[in-house]
Image (cartoon, rainbow, N blue to C red; front, side, top):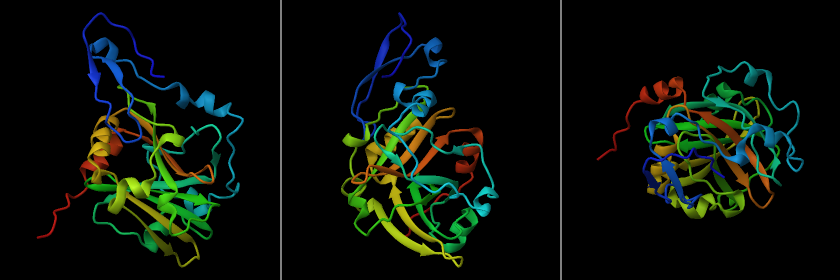
Amino acid sequence: MMMLRRSSRPSVLLPSCCLPFAKGKAVVDTSEECQEDDVSTDASTPNEVSEADSVYCAAPANALTAASQAAPKEDWWSPAEAADSGLALAGCLVSARLVPHSAQASALLYADMGACQGSFVAVWLGLGRCWLVYLCSSGEELDQGALDALKLILRPVKTRLPFPNKPAEDADFIGPYFGAGASLDDVMTVDGAQIRGVRIDLHSNWLVKMGLHLGLQQGNCIDLLVVDWPKRAIIAPVRLTVTQMYKDQVAGMPISIPGP
C-alpha cells in the first residue's frame, strides 16, 4: 500500500497503465511539501524482508568468487534485499554495469564482471541508449524455452511518486509479453564459466518505456527481479538506485543511430 501525506491542495490522477506489471490507480499530491517526502511500499521495506520466514537463499555460500569481489563497485547497484513471500532466492548478484546499446554478449565482458567457473545468469535490460547488464551466480538451469517461464518484476523500494507494480503471480511472462524484444543466448568463458543471457529490450514496449520514465528519476530505488515462475525462484535480483553516478554514466553513452 502506498502511504501518502494528505494535503488540502488539488490532487491529480496518475495514469494506471505505466507498466504491464501493474494497473492500479494512485492519487498523487502535487504540492511541494508532499513531493519532498519519499513514497515507499509496505511490501518492500528491508525489515519485512528480513522477517519473511518463507524466503531463503538456495545459492551456494561461496558463489561470489575472488574475481567478482575485486570487480569495480559503483554506488547505483547493490543486491536486492526484498523478495516475494514464498519465492526462493536462487541467484546471488555478482556485479552490474552499463554498456552501450551496440554492445554484445562476450566471454571477455562476463569474465571482467566476475564470471569464473560455475553457472551464471546475465540479464540485459535495454534502456534506450544503453543496456543495464547484471550478472548473478545461479544454481538453476534454464532451458531454451525459459522465456515462457520467466517473469520480470519491477518492485519500487523508494520512490518520490507512486510506481505501479504487480506481485509475481500477476506479472506477465517475458516471452509472450515482449515477443521479439526478448531473447536468450549462451556464452562460455575460458575459465569454464557458463553464462545464460536473458536479454529484454524494455524500450521495445511503449507502456514499459513510459513507466521507466517515471521510475528512473534521481533518488528512486527499484528492485529488478527475474523469476523462474514454475520453480518459484528468483534467479537474478539486483537493486537499482538512481544516483548522480548512474545518470552521468547513462548520459555518457553514445547514441545509437539506426542504419538505412
